[in-house]
Image (cartoon, rainbow, N blue to C red; front, side, top):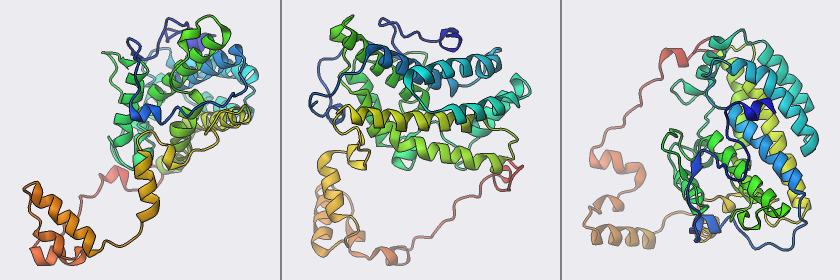
Length: 343
């Protein structure tokens, strides 16, 4: 296929995504959380798993910076052709979104226009734009717990960042390449060509525990970005719709085969959340902090040699009593404030 074959990582068993390294024999707590005991799920055909791996690798490359001279040709011709072929073999109902993508990418005039569009959507500083570092959707901010948890999952699967890789572990393309690696490993194991290559993390559980949490909000942000930035065409919105459709379809298929916990995507199954913390949050979330709680906080602070006097002051009164001044964060740059057409 033209898109996967143009200098991108192949799906040969010897090839790994943008993270590579020696296999690890132990799994961290975060990784173990994503590996519930299997209950005799229905095995999937190796060819289907391999084609699904190729699909997610295509999607990973589609969201990379389009800075190659031939990027527009690849996105406008090779990618749709490959996705059409893979949609058939993977039984993905993406035809409407793929038609939208063809129209949108066809409206991009040239390579510089494509690069400007990408920069407008993903590279301009500020909060009012879609974020390829999906930890912002998982944690509500940048460089949260999911970033470290994902890095640990990759590492415990025997993968280490390539020295030339500049993206963080929560980058959309890194996650989708990892998902492709998981699927290809499962295909090799199921086909008997390399039974020892079955990844220690289930691709289905990774989909449910991580990708399913951010793909919808990411697509929604791209939908809002079009009118906000006055974009005449937004092929990346169509790509996000294709990705969301595929994730939902794959989760439904895997759940039907008996994959445990694949049908669930609640917060308790996120890779960065300890089960005990999830249990405690569900019990105490929203409850007021009592005097006993404050006493524990004071004792912990004092034991650490830290000031604790402020704990006795009600939060609503703390600024006034302690003489602290409230501050207002600076306004965003003018090009981020206006309506459609600005930015």
